[in-house]
Amino acid sequence: MKNIIGNINKAFDNRVRLGIMSVLMVNEYADFTTLKQVLGVTDGNIASHMKALEKKGYVKVEKSFIDRKPNTRYSTTKAGREDFKKHIEAIEKLLNQNHKKT
Amino acid sequence: MKNIIGNINKAFDNRVRLGIMSVLMVNEYADFTTLKQVLGVTDGNIASHMKALEKKGYVKVEKSFIDRKPNTRYSTTKAGREDFKKHIEAIEKLLNQNHKKT
Image (cartoon, rainbow over all chains, first blue to last red; front, side, top):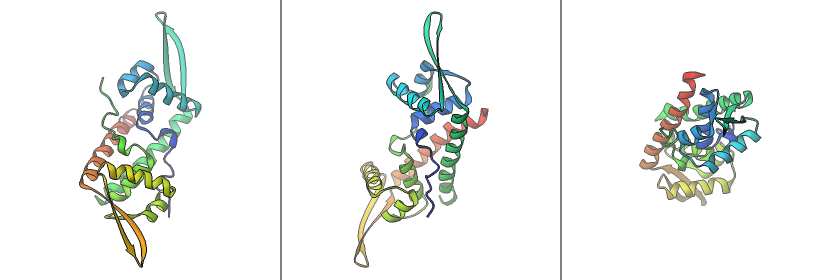
């Protein structure tokens, strides 16, 4: 019997990570504050998810100063983009088997 | 700024729960063994997710004997079906904003 959730990537298996990657897939960059507002989560929450995604090589972090204020912005890597697309396909495939019968 | 992951239901926010509900949405019942095989997870893993879904009122558990052997089978409730549909819509909406720009 085929494992129907085998292709779902654990690194993206959480709504905050789904949200982060969805934003980074359609924006070249997104900074910390924007992500926090758009996802409605705390500093600590985003920081921990970003650290995990960075560790997996799915996200790049750039630190700079804008008007002498520290700015942290994120972008997705090629690997992040490719693996997130596979993750989305796996979720859509799983969910589409729903639509066939309901 | 709108919270783009606000409608994603934490109770379903995990690939095993996504898999469980997907199976139960297109099958009147599914027993423990079938779910374990189809999802490729351990007994303990399924049992804990089922307990959580049952506690939320999203899944019903029926225990019976088949050929004198104990059988546990699951089905989704009306609330489970309705909320999972909303969850799927929220995920598809989040992911579709991806397709517009990539």
